[in-house]
Image (cartoon, rainbow, N blue to C red; front, side, top):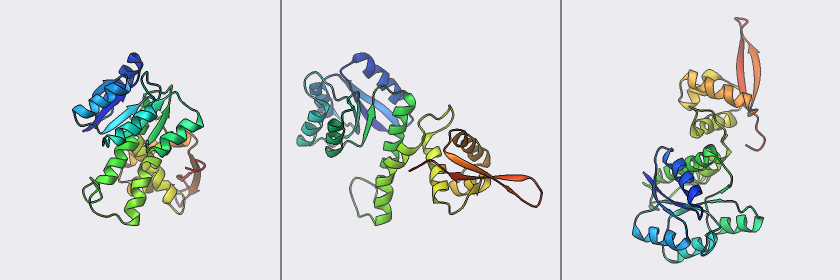
Length: 234
């Protein structure tokens, strides 16, 4: 279970974000804090894996808090969740090691996409000598680790109910890596999914403009749908 500390000066927003976190499998809200001092105290009290951190806090900025966390030896990961959208703040968050940056306002789907990306990163790290910074990684493993967050961020955040971002991202990767258009059967086979599940996701992604759909006519005369990933830069 991934233990999350929600930090926001607005009590109502903190409750909403905590409720969002609680809805994502594998994540648990370990605490809420409304000031930097409260956040540091929570980190001192027990295990925190991830901090959802607002930048605008009453006693100091979120970025200053990140610096103090590191100075005091707290290694919890950080996802910025803030209305601050100036480039200087975004750059500073990146340089301080924030893994993601989510701009307010956002809905459940937006936050879930970030959390799914973080969970994918943890899985990738755990695949290297059991995680925890032990062992060595080859280039392929390093690419997988660095690509985990990027891939999940690229997955559509506005998925309909019953769809998951990791599955959508899996289909995206299958199509991007394919040298030619694939049928639903081929996508399902390469992704390790049932054909009905693959077709459901392909239909949604095609309607969202993420895929190019072409028809290929075989011996039976019935057209076969074939799919190519079409989202620019994705």
